[in-house]
Image (tube, rainbow, N blue to C red; front, side):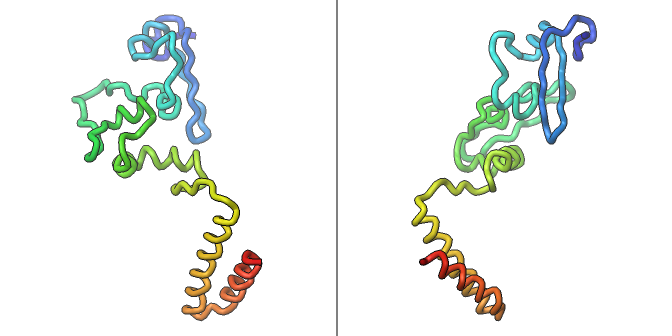
Length: 157
């Protein structure tokens, strides 16, 4: 098979990337892979695996665009893609369009809940249910309020 980049040499390097259920494959010769910055000795970094084989590489066409960076720690987006780590808490907001899909795929939601002892989880659930009960009574949704009251009673017993 010929190299997908130079279309001259025989391809010896195979990259496979799956994104949104679509598998993308790239076959390149060793010379093109080395020219693109891929080491023949080292595996792909996590960011290259997540964002594609060209993640963190300079753009080819046009004038170089100014790269986004965090206002707090001055970390550029390319550094996040390279290291797969953020520099500070502000980076989550700055790079939210890059980070949010990754977090959604790794966690149940966008907020990390962590693990808690069973008694703490029950206490937190009861607190949330009581808040919902108060709102239901205030808006005169008495059937919902009765169901919430029953759930609170079941949890506290």
